[in-house]
Image (cartoon, rainbow, N blue to C red; front, top):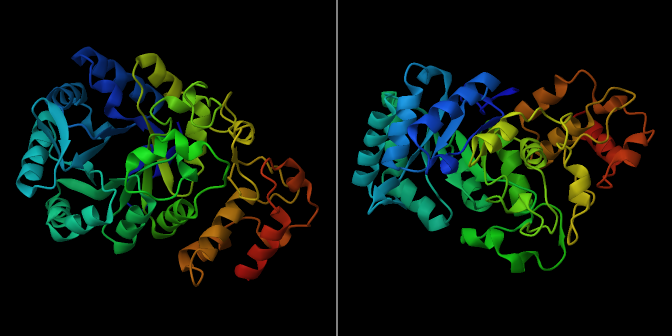
Length: 381
């Protein structure tokens, strides 16, 4: 499995990991089999949003003797009350739940301490002023977490957290349908079918800006809801009116800037195996470009999706990467030096473009690639 660095954290993760939804109703033996399967395929990242005591204890037992081989993304602000998961901003409850998490997992450190479910500006303000972010920083200083994260479905709130500077990892909902929707503090609007009843065009600008800012600042993204809760994998339930394969959804998410890992909420070992066997753009059923162009009421036009259909370039330019760096550069008032250095490090740059236009004939999204190459030459000159 391909390994990516999670932003600037220094943490290395396999590009497909395990979300904990599929673990909630399973017995101890399932956890052992799931971790064995992950380890055999080079996957290592596990998300633990649920504070279920059984989940934490079963996973802790399965991790015994191999904790160091896995990256644990645990959540702050989740508690187990009245036999169910709840979100809290009560600092005393947050502390108690975190301590319980470490004890049940049999570890003294989480790799990512994820501040849970921050979808509104008022919630983010409470995180800043109510001691939650300070507590996360306290845990990091004490070595109880390696990096501080935040989970959100709202690109404007997530962007505010990233720009504040205290967040090193972002857990965000990414798929070809959600990426079309403008910011909303009500997460359920992401799968409100009325929102998809009219024609939608291209990625929401705030979402694009969030991904680009994360990449520019070195904030790694772990992806939740890549399958839209499973809806996108079934034609009769898909918000797009067309079903994607799991590999297409994974490939789409992995092509967004700053994304390091897609967390698959597999509900069976067979589903987990399918996700873990994802092998990149060359894999069967991994090419998402054609299915995106078939969505009946959703269109991408003129917007580079970084899908790589434009390749190969006869001048050996990595066209998708050049456009990705160009978008990062143009998202800022001045070209960030980190972006400029990434561009300088390319073996072949945009000035090698002969303007032949062959790449444009291959692009499913009608991107004016030659114009992008000319702009890149100007911006990075």
